[in-house]
Length: 81
Image (cartoon, rainbow, N blue to C red):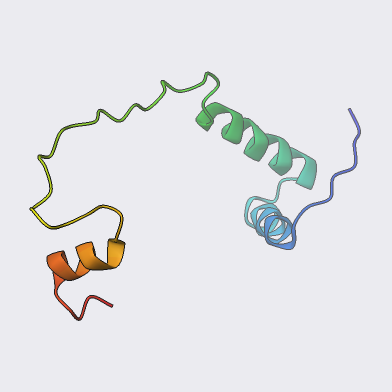
């Protein structure tokens, strides 16, 4: 099958380098690299990553989740910036 591709400069440079190193025609190198990419790419969707929430206990008395600056100061000190 014949087709036209527009390659990014970095991709074209890597392909040209591979052609020089192997002595293979560009067509052969492109097909080989694409096949390798298909093999290493996942074909099926991965299992969904789920974060399990855990209770870390309540806040110290006097602290509020509504004021991030106050929380940072309480955790990291006044020079938290």
